[in-house]
Length: 156
Image (cartoon, rainbow, N blue to C red; front, top):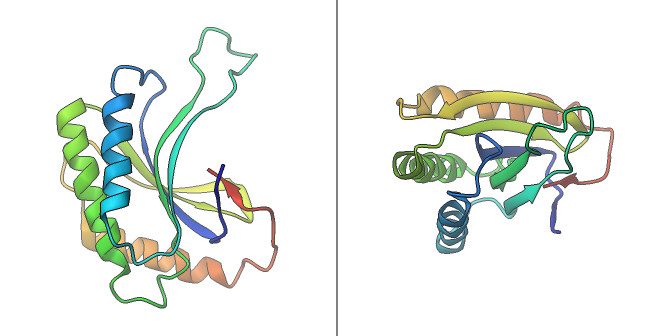
């Protein structure tokens, strides 16, 4: 499976684990969206993985990560970086309307895979894009000085 090497990664995943009825549609739309777009980031990854079941909760479905991971380390280098995020939010909003499934956006860090910064849900309500841009920019810039600790790439 491909891996991202960026320290900062935006994770945009469909919310939930029972995705069998919507996974084919979401999978095809996201793969087409990724292929058709000229990205400002050099790192973009389609994610479709079902995690191992938790033996402590045998009645629960295993987690299913289905979505998109664009790298964010280029935020300081490219003024048009947020165009990708806006296009992704628009794509996910369309998928939400069509599937009635919510999507979650959060930032993950390669050197600290246990740390995630929740940003917002794509759930039929409007997303404050100005706020989202400001927060992602702030997190990507402030955390870059704290990433001296090189770890294996985020496995998405």
